[in-house]
Amino acid sequence: MLTTLHQQQKHCIVYLKVRSGRLGNRMFMIASAYGLARLHSCHLYLTPEIINEMHALFILDLSPFLISTTIFKSFIHNTSKLMTTTGKSVGCQYVRELTRPNAISPGHIFELHGYWQSYLHFAKYSNDIRERIFVARQPVLEKVSKLFIEICEQK
Image (cartoon, rainbow, N blue to C red; front, side, top):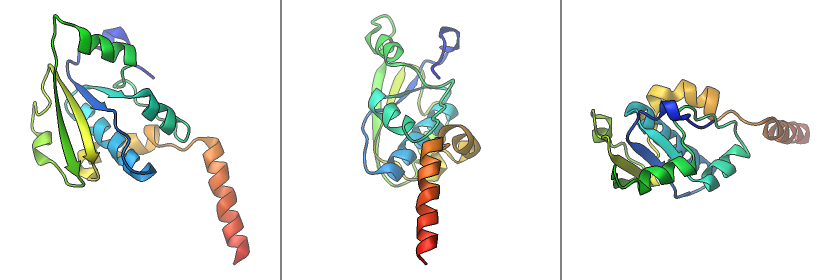
């Protein structure tokens, strides 16, 4: 679900465009981006490739934070409200300074790079993440169930 126009009071964006690693790493990246967007009341933008890949497996309900590509492009091309792009490349560590107020301030696009593997970036929102974002789709559940049954029957 994407944000509607009346919800666009947030003036910062947490942005994830690079798909690093395998599924678990990608889930950590999305959860970290979601956690930072929630913490700083920012919009969240994931590329269509990331959304499509994860949506094939999970419900991935990122509303009301997720914005569309059209809205994202309108933010970055709006010359009356220039936005500064910053980023952080992380190699599995927790970045405490990002939890400070205004660490991602209005007028900024914050891009995640590297391997954001610390659950502390999203721990505050772990229930939402489990209940709304990384909920497996029915075909995935059926496939996993079948696999476990086959494994158990072989023993």
